[in-house]
Image (cartoon, rainbow, N blue to C red; front, side, top):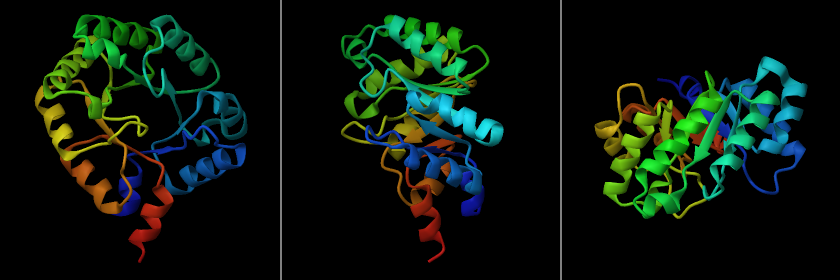
Length: 218
């Protein structure tokens, strides 16, 4: 697979708190040039992106980001607003505190509620693996599967660690057949991108598309 072919699986990401409109424009222009799967952006920019680019870019945004502990009602409101403004894909963060407290059914119920709100739109569930034990990761694989989400995602990129080979391999063993995998966090080279795609990820999140592409030309 060429680097250009690999970029078709990438959610080209800009989620920094200080991202200005010029940064978002650069992201969208690169996404169009590279043919990435989507741009993953702060909710506040969805409407302006949609108005500017229409169907030239596929818009993904984040909900309950990056800590996950907002109440379900707030996450639902975020989803409704995002979809109304032109977003197509939602990456939500689970309530990590609930996971650590062993409230796995509660987490599953929240995911199910968010998926119902998303309808036919893609829902990716961020479980933030760097904070979880293996048992908790397995429990989240079950929760994501049972709730009917489209993807399980490793990381926000704002935690203490990002995607790893081991976590993706664990996901593959424990998710249901209808769930796909998104790796994110710390993916900065063409080698990283290739590895996660070869492991079976259907999406990869990175803010370093340009660097990855440029390095592949050296």
